[in-house]
Image (cartoon, rainbow, N blue to C red):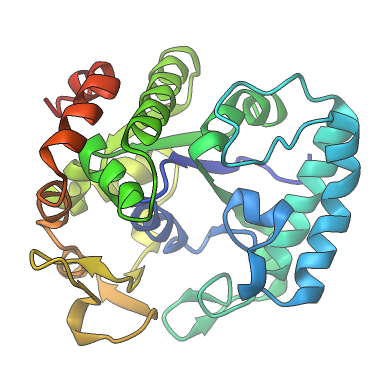
Length: 300
């Protein structure tokens, strides 16, 4: 395989995974492909240039045709059929090449503040992928491909996760059942795979410095090489229901924080603000459908 010792984030959309992504991308030995894992193979829609989407579709076509299922679908909440060695070779090659193409300033352009990567440094870097939602069930395939991989699963209070989806039109029972399925897969994989670790979003917010140390330890990354932590500003819901960016920013942008200041990026009451927006009926439905995982991770 072209990718050695890759790192995979396993998480839910609307679950705070960008925090973990930027923790790890702050390390000069870690680089990502162009987008989340499904976007590497399926594109990002109209926000991405047409030629990039076309290239990705062409690259993915033989894998999808041979596999006879859309293995990189976010909506496929089940274990995938066995993937043969040739398809694994193609997947590995695409991930490696997409890492080399991710040269936007928000991706692999900077290895530190105002310090660009050399191409050879990107080639030698460890691949970092983000597997969301239905791609939680791709862990088996990636472990077979990369026995030396590190998997870090991020879980968040299901009430807050589900609210983020309900606000965007999802059915409360449907998203709660998917949350439960994803959590149970995470629990199963954490028990069976040797380098699979689970961390809670709430613990990162409560003690980010300690969690950063733990994450680097799991991934065998030398934290002393990280002078500043990169974070992306994203709109976060406030108590009044409005979205705003941190530190008065009015758009998505990259911010570099000193190691002893990066915790100021986080909105500590984001969970509470989201959970308070749920109706009593929505809360009841989520608790009914996802109680097993909510109890396991000490959310109820």
